[in-house]
Length: 117
Image 1 (tube, rainbow, N blue to C red):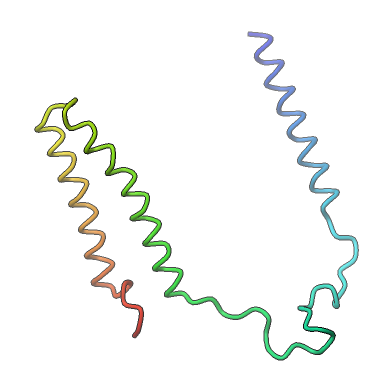
Image 2 (image 1 turned 180 degrees about the vertical axis):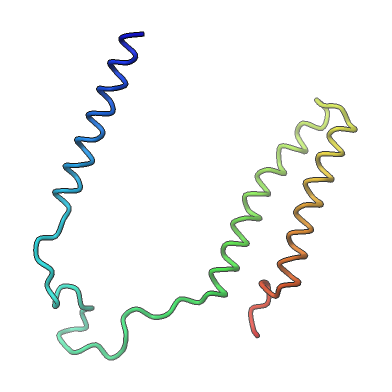
């Protein structure tokens, strides 16, 4: 038990030392206005370098990621059908798909899936 505690504290000390060193070494000492501005061949920038991000695109991307993760949760359901009880498998699968469809319908009714307004 003493050895585990010793290695735990040793690991925590090494981790904290590395994090403190990284934070001290990564700080910029001088903030230069020219270095922080966008570079356009020596000319003044024509417009803002930070264009506004499309919130619609972000929402569609998040919904895609959610359903992509749910596909990975659905794939094992088909492979365990022969191993488990058919009633419990069917109940779990239908409940999971029902929750997904209710979420999809809610997003659709709120207009999150409409690209143009």
